[in-house]
Length: 95
View 1 (cartoon, one colour):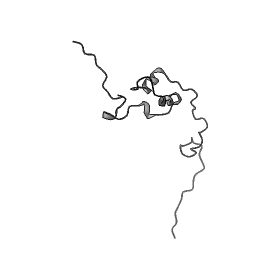
View 2 (tube, rainbow, N blue to C red):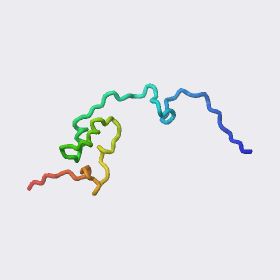
View 3 (cartoon, one colour):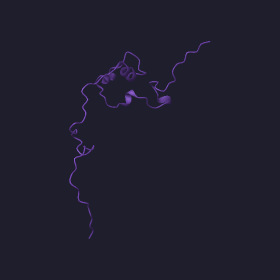
View 4 (cartoon, rainbow, N blue to C red):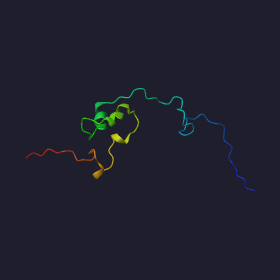
């Protein structure tokens, strides 16, 4: 016969919710984003390396919230850097 010993759980303590315990609900008192502010700097970063007129498929940026998106961050280097995120800035040479 195989037996296993389990420690009896102590009285449940009043602690903050841990992610994963109730993934379908936000904990009471959790911060809520009420306003999304997209500055001109954000738009410039989001459209870095894309020439105007901007393609229709980029309209998703109008609905982009405050969550992470790899589209507006530098990615791979070398021949895969299609938007020039890693290109050296142009230098002005004077003689």
